[in-house]
Amino acid sequence: MAKQSLKDPKFRCNACKEFYFAEENPVHYQCPKHGYLCEKHIIDTDFYFTGISDAKSERKIHLPSEFIGCCHLYKDSTRGESVKSVTYFTGNPKKIVSDEQFIEYFQKFNACTKKALKFNWNSNLKMWVEEGKEVIEKPAAKSEKSNKSGEIKLLIDLFEKDILTKEQFLNQLKSSI
Image (cartoon, rainbow, N blue to C red; front, side):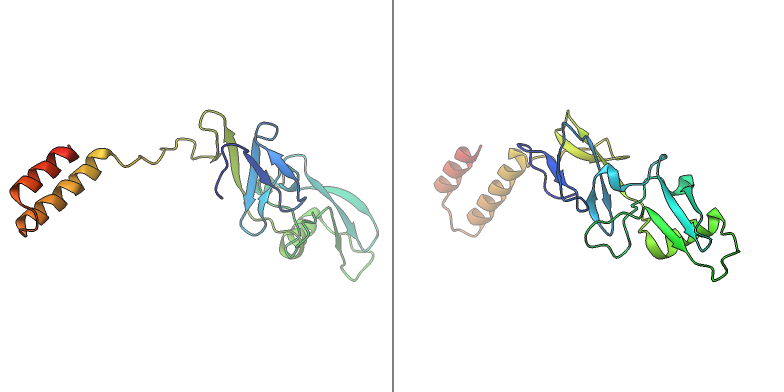
């Protein structure tokens, strides 16, 4: 995830080019190919596309559950265009095309269909958290103890090499404690 701003928590959808703020839109996605996306560009249970065959018959085709949470932008889209209809030509206008053939064509040639990572806004931590990784340990700040032990080791080295006198060593040691 990119660096997050605590003052202005937002993300920019790479498809619709709009900014979404965390308080109003607590969920966003990250496609491996298209980057950050809003919910509009992710396949959900209500998503369907229109299948058009040679016979010019149109029908709504719902995708199987394995596609839920996947990106539905065109594979080579640089402008963030979503796949809403698929035209499947068989060469024979009398041949009826099945939904499975449309779905296979949809996946193979048109849509990205890569699984997107889901990020939820955590209002307690004030940051985006990847779904499934809700338990986050904040990086521990370096303790003063570790810094002081490094200083003490340096003072001991300087004293052993006769760079510091005994008085200098003791004075430095007292000031670092």
